[in-house]
Length: 230
Image 1 (tube, helix red, strand yellow):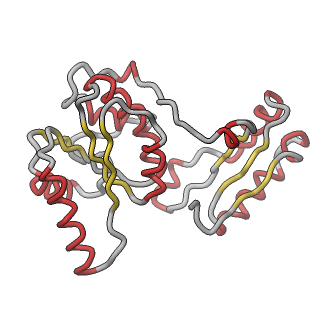
Image 2 (cartoon, rainbow, N blue to C red; image 1 turned 135 degrees about the vertical axis):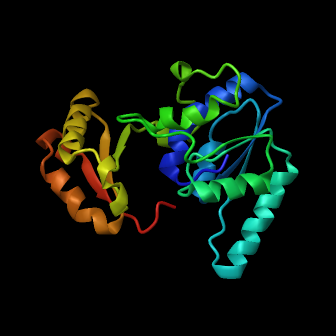
């Protein structure tokens, strides 16, 4: 499975969990992700089968090409039954990767078309349906993610209202929806803290949302804009 960033990996978790449930402890998943941050999410889930993660090279030029070639050879040596690419921007690139990996079955970018108002979890699940017998989207569930006790003990609501890239602004939820969600959470969980999370350039947008919160939510809200999520 060739995948990408943090949000996409989280959205793919229900499909991976259902495939893992159906295939059982003898299955193995090789998942290419963007960085150790995405791998840490996969590591926090208790899988039946084996989940191995690989990182996309951050190098440039010849070094990147060589690192990518070595990665593809490692995947090919695993003799995969299926190869899926839910998150590759180019269909041509997906086909080239499929040939390099040489899986018996491939479900590639461009062969599964997004549907209007379809959640990403269901979109990614449709890549699994042709290669996992008995796979049903109606049975999708988010798997349990193991976190440290000191993290789970204190209720926290982390909202990331902004969409970083310009080409994906159509995916953004209206700011008023985040205001309503934070206000509702403040009423439901009286001790919860609320974090408006984003990159440093997104701080003005977060400040506008914070200013629109109810007094109850605003006094427990914080704006968090680290240089990197790591």
